[in-house]
Length: 109
Image 1 (tube, rainbow, N blue to C red):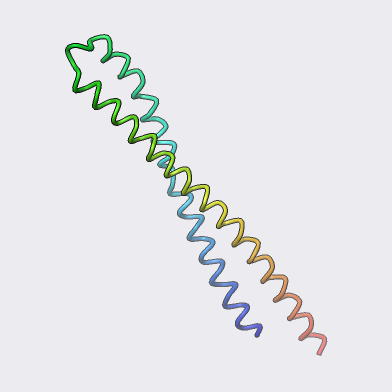
Image 2: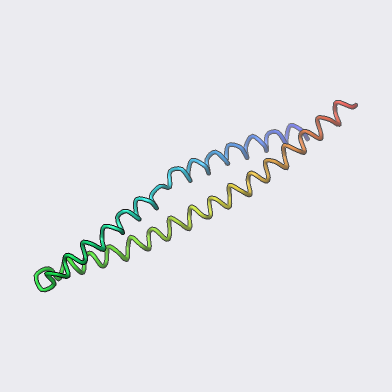
């Protein structure tokens, strides 16, 4: 039983590291925020010459909507990963406590 718990613990730690790596790789949200911040001044500038660049204005507005939707998706994914990390950390702690308890019981025998 202890070997099974240790194997489960090792697997959970690897999974936790994978989730943390995914979370670290998800800096896309910050990058998207930077791009979104750039669109507003461009849109204002293009609106000053509204009759001359209608296609550009439309493109900027569509890009703004697409980036905001993408950012919302990335933020939700990061939030979900954070919840998975917390739950897995809790599971790891419980498994470590169980292993320690079993080792103490075995040592007393």
